[in-house]
Length: 124
Image (cartoon, rainbow, N blue to C red; front, side, top):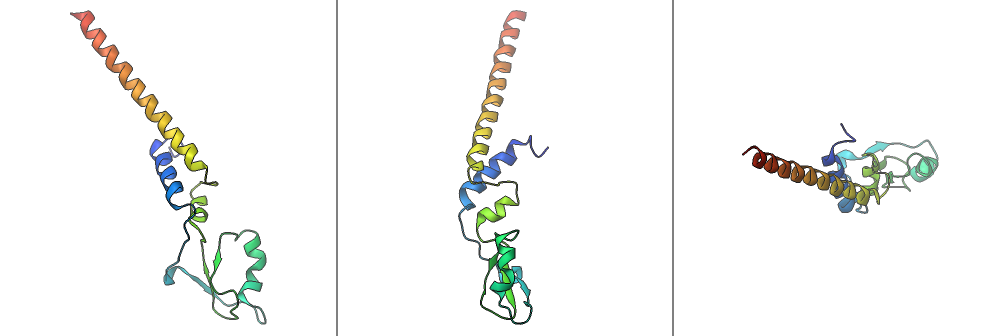
């Protein structure tokens, strides 16, 4: 049902247009806290992770030696990638799909309406 629901495409296009490039600011209770190994800063400890899998994470205090604070997302695009919107242009694709589907719905409604009126006239 996920892929055939036009409301999914409408909402994903709206989200893509409004939140893709917006910066994300985490609330204090949303921040992950941990301590790096001895003699390493938070930035040194997470450097390889942030270049690979954690490319969207936001390290809030890279020079600290204790209590590293990370936020899960840096921009709205990082969040939208978790919602199956891999690129910003997917918003335009999804908006086009919504317009196409609504046009088909309108065409079917119009054809059914014209067919029903023609049938009623033929019966009289």
